[in-house]
Length: 129
Image 1 (cartoon, rainbow, N blue to C red):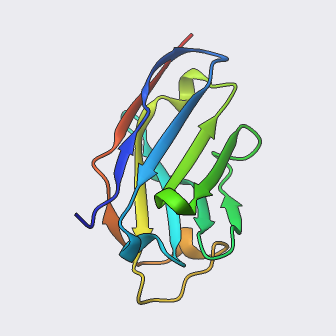
Image 2 (cartoon, rainbow, N blue to C red):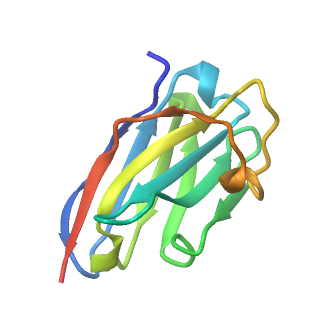
């Protein structure tokens, strides 16, 4: 299976934490940009955070700055999104995606670059007030 597989979503109260996981095949994980995106009810999909698995560089969109941390485990071909101090406005379907591995990617520009070819099914995060 080439598509990433997310897990770890759920329902929490405001102020709580969740850690999302994204398992990927070596083909799309190795030395590539992996990212977390989200789509809230009635909203467009937005980027949250990106990591370059070849060296660990990270980039956070405004939606992910300060409270979210993206990390990786190369032994498991897995990317994580640690979400702390969750707010009701963080309620969304969270998607993991991999950039096209045959294209160069930069964590700084990837959010605004076409090439996110591999998407997971998503995992729901619901934050109650």
